[in-house]
Image 1 (cartoon, rainbow, N blue to C red):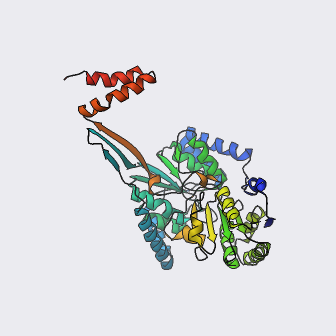
Image 2: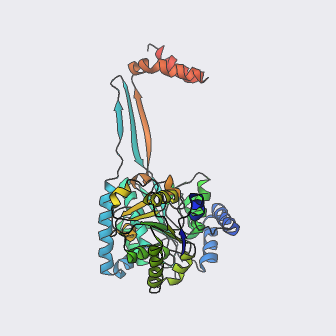
Image 3: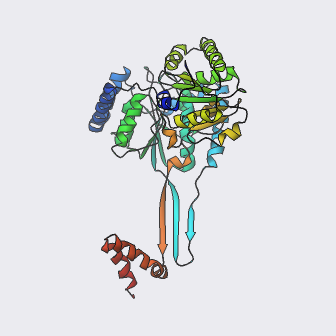
Amino acid sequence: MEIFIEPSRDRWADLARRVQREDDEVGSTVRDILEAVREGGDNSLRDIILKVEGAVPESLKVSEEEFAEAERSVASDLKEAIKTAYSRIKTFHEKEVPQEVVWDDGNGIVCRRRFLPIRRVGLYIPGGSAPLFSTILMLGIPSLIAGCRERIICTPAAKDGSIAPSILYTAALCGIKDIYKIGGAQAIAAMAYGTQSIRKVDKIFGPGNRYVLKAKGLVSQDGIAIDMPAGPSEVLVVADGSAKVPFIAADLLSQAEHGPDSQVILVCPDEGMAMDVCCEVESQAERLPRKDVVEKALVESRIIVLKDPADRMDFANFYAPEHLILSVENPEAEALEVRSAGSVFLGNYSPESAGDYSSGTNHTLPTMGMAAAWSGIGVDSFMHAVSFQSLSKSGLERLGGTIMTMAEAEGLQAHAQAVRIRLNNNG
């Protein structure tokens, strides 16, 4: 990891630059996949799966027998861990349910804003080198609480056509039985446009690689709703003299192991800590089974030394990280200064991995600086708000003059007439 000592604010934009590995070939490939699935349906889908994965499952949909086998094969200790995480995530997300807003002005006009579940949602679950069954909890639980009537999952199968038992077990726990053995951009295409065997969804959720990210962006241009533009994982750690070097190194590595496009950043008060963390990262990385992935991610990662605590928080807000860890003496006070972050972890004993699995918050979060304006997944992500209004005749009489004056000022005479005809009708 490269170290930068007291960089000027003019350099912050360059230091906050994310890893960008997309090229013209990715965009072209994804566009071809989307168009092929939209035009050819299941036949094109199977052709693409064969070309990309090397084999096509006999049936794209997971069978009841596969669910039953997964139930038998998942280890009991993992089942208990998943159930514990399920309970905590469900408890927290139940507190997020948005409430209906009602205003009765007492003069014949009532306004409401009601939250309704999205009818049919598609959940993309990565399953390549690391089957992310935890993401099923993060998407399956809030969609269940929201009341979505139809929920499907797309996730890539292994060469033998199987899905990781942990994914099937977790999906069943979340009440989801419609699972399709499709990964990558082709899965996004199937959910966005529909095929003979997969009905089009109303909104697509879930993280993925750069092909999935590109596909989500392109289908959103066709009017398909997506959760957010979530790209490679990232973490920024803000540390002061109270931070523990081994903890910092472990947090940086926990994000770096997600993939070679991941990015990790430390902002600390002095060069001594920066050097100590570098050494500790190298030492801990040697013991990791995904060392090769970690090393690639660390190439684009960096340590920034800023002595002023205010500068450290300013840089964190400028970067707007997916995950922000405040390894500082008074994290609650520093948390009041957070303006842009997906999820924040306070203090030396709050590792980012707690949020990834079982603290209760959601781990599906905006990346690439989008945390400055986008939110992570919550129950409201699976709902849409509809406004209602009810006016009695006396209510319209009270407000009619205002409506007609404004409509006529905008040159919209028919709007004004829609009020006037009612006020002049004595029936």
